[in-house]
Length: 159
Image (cartoon, rainbow, N blue to C red; front, side, top):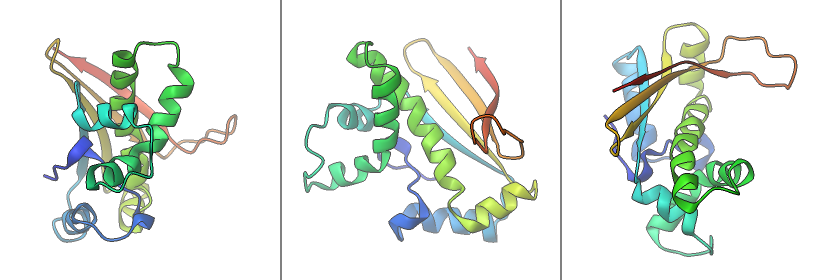
């Protein structure tokens, strides 16, 4: 289990971190068969990201949180008319999706996923209504319409 602020998985090109080391150990040494990235409602890290005005802030939290800036950009583009709280809920899930895609930047993860030795799952716990959502990242699809090479599938909600 890896825990960090906003449950982020940085892409490989961001350099070494405790997250990278734990992933490498889990996948290559323990040969885990599933990775589950879980976000949650009322995430303080995501609320910080969504309210950030100055990405040049030098604090540790701001430097870490900006790793999820693409989730913020996507949220702002698709949910701009929503309230701040609704945008945060959207970004909490979008940051999980971005982390799932970031997992594929690690060659040892991408290889095991493509060879069906490893599955990547997203999850979201909503503290307000006590529900848990789960979905799977499918990279073994042929999407020739929009250039996508992945699909989020098998979405379930448990209460």
